[in-house]
Length: 100
Image (cartoon, rainbow, N blue to C red):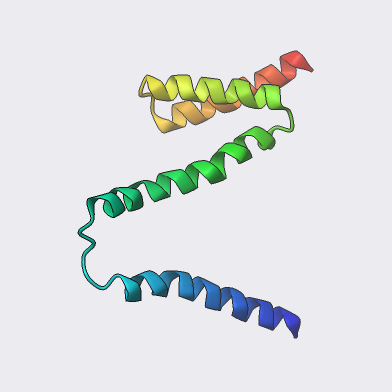
């Protein structure tokens, strides 16, 4: 019976998170500061969720750092996403194979 309560609470919280901004901000937001703040929120949240996952994915901080360095370098040179992902994975795998 408690699982039903957990699901109901999660549904309520999810609904409130989506409903409150729609009811509070009925008109277009005119503040430049607030609009620019809201523009960068998705990037900040994605970074906060992704960066820790990158460094704990391999179980070894050194191999994760090598994979991240390769990904950042290739992304800097505007390589396609699939190339960046495959090269970073290969670099992390090879560095794990070489180091251990």
